[in-house]
Image (cartoon, rainbow, N blue to C red; front, side):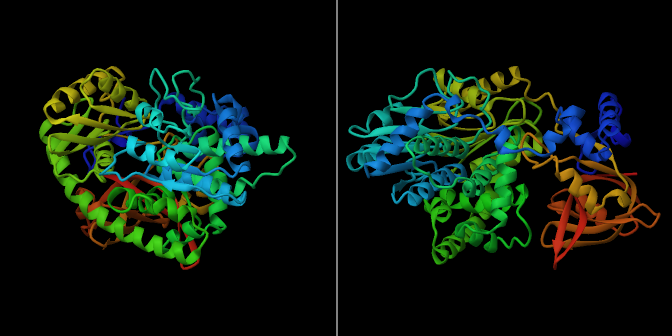
Length: 580
């Protein structure tokens, strides 16, 4: 295929790839049959939406898309046992993962229980001392004092720890890939169990918990009791869905869209305090959830007290929320500094090993286990390949892995663990964790690369930048962006459209902070558009576009609305550029 706009190598070293002739044809048909703007039509075509399905896609509702909770195995039993504990005032413990999904899942249960006049003990393991998921000492201790232990966002592979919870019933609400056998528990609700259909495999743990609460309310209603309202909890579900990089397809679109509306009402003290400390000055979007709020909630589990994020999301006290948000913001700053050091070392090591295979990986002594997942995500983004980053300590490596679309990383990691090359490993399609002996590291990564190559990893070149359409600066209006956003929310599995602006002139370029660039560009006919390029000076973009009289450029990026001082303007978030 001919390079789009003839760009074989952009300023960041990528080849531009445009829409196919078939995509052009279908987009034209969509415009003719629906009357929608061409830019929006291209988004719908990219999602596989037919013209007759467009109206329903642009207005997703939970009423139509929310699955019946009972379609998941063990759901009725899980909700019934949960309600029995509430009615009998039995002590309940919630064992949650230390990330956003785990914290949100725990907060969902705590808020619901609080509305029913019941409490729960929150237990979140320390990432370094205890590692991921239930462990035997913790489960033994919780079982001594609680009749019911609910494991959220973890537990599906925890056979021995669950067996150690003697005297207590255990319910698991999870979404990580299951093994051939399940722990001996009262119920394990997980759309990624081996015996599930896979139709709901895209749900995060918080969505599974939300469905369990829907089922609990239904069982209460059968007894003539009105359960707590659930729609107000969707801000937590939206945060978890985006932060856990769940694909924004199917019911996830409706959950996130409604959750963003709930969050905009600023009724949850924890999220209000977090938004304020992150200096959010406009209505929340998936960008804010993924890049401002999520990382701060995660910071406690990464390098601080593991329960800080869940406590923030669960609190109803504004003063406590402000204190927790301030602490998480401090930890997030510290986390970024640690991450930068590890990222530089990991990228240098991965480049020396080679970036053209089906897997990129790096391992180093003393690398903080709380940031290896973020660094793995950075390597994945830079190379368009699955990535693994491992911290080594005393001959043992603990690492995190991140995948690309179409490659089931969790299944591959679990296979390598089953073959004995990893001490343990598991996860879901897009992310996984693993533990490996240092002397088996090379063999384990070679085997993982082999399995990933069979799935097609490494076939997409890191230099390819896919573009959806050409656009002129004068066409990039607020109205157009608002039309395009009807096809959102955008995120994992549902990327926002990327436009190319051809042959434009750069005006008023200036450096912002250490590495960002802000400028205006025009087509020479009077139309202009503002743009911002984050991290521009980490590549050739910054210095080149900042140079006065550098000539004309093709620009590529995504459109967004920039609100400042009460005024809203269209803006391009620049991702790449090429000389004309």
